[in-house]
Amino acid sequence: MKVNLNKITMNETIKTLLSRRSHRDYQDKSIEQEKIEQIITAGKAAPSSRNQQKYLIKVITNVDLIQELAQESKRLLNEKRPEISLREMADPIFYQAPLLILIFVEKGDKWAGINAGLLASNMFNAAWSLGIGSCYIGLANILNQSNLLKSKIDYPDDYELMTPLIFGYPKSDQVPVPVRKSDNVEYV
Ligand SMILES: Cc1cc2nc3c(=O)[nH]c(=O)nc-3n(C[C@H](O)[C@H](O)[C@H](O)COP(=O)(O)O)c2cc1C
Image (tube, rainbow, N blue to C red; front, side):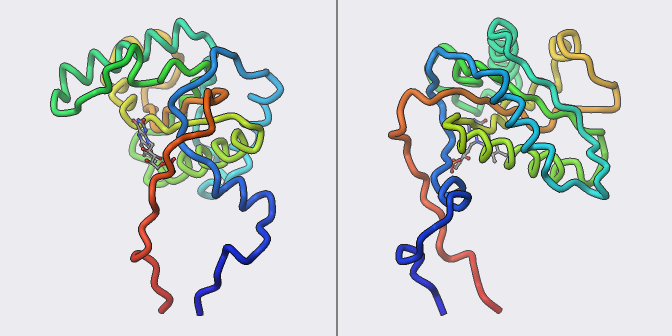
């Protein structure tokens, strides 16, 4: 039997999960260190395969470096993936976010994507509970093909960038709500 969720009083956690959106327009304001640490701590509380926590988290608050990586991603995408039409804006990759978190994982680890995805999801929701917006930037995985990433960020040769995540205080709370499909759940 389907329950009408509108009639149920949601707890704060579920409200946070349901109201989180991908934000792509940020205030020109950095995120307080204490909040960054809360986001990371919440991320690391996520489950990981055999609790091995086989990932490296690189936290970048240097906006010049974030811009350098954005422009490099843009350059590489234009060169190697011309079929992708990037938005006409100064930074269509990291949207001039003040915080970039890059999660690196071991190449070939079959659980890597899941471990990093769970970590990212916790970070997004923790951030949103603090009023901080976020967005997953899959396009920036192209940085794995760049010498610039390796020259700027210290990570082992057998690791690769898996999840690029941006964070910032949203300019507006009027963001589109992408519709969720209703035909992909079945009780069996
Ligand atoms: C694996 C993955 C890759 C994504 N890559 C990008 C990206 O490169 N650029 C971007 O603006 N949004 C990206 N997104 C955000 C999605 O577009 C967004 O999550 C989706 O439209 C649903 O919207 P919501 O997060 O507001 O619910 C990505 C999301 C995921 C999970």
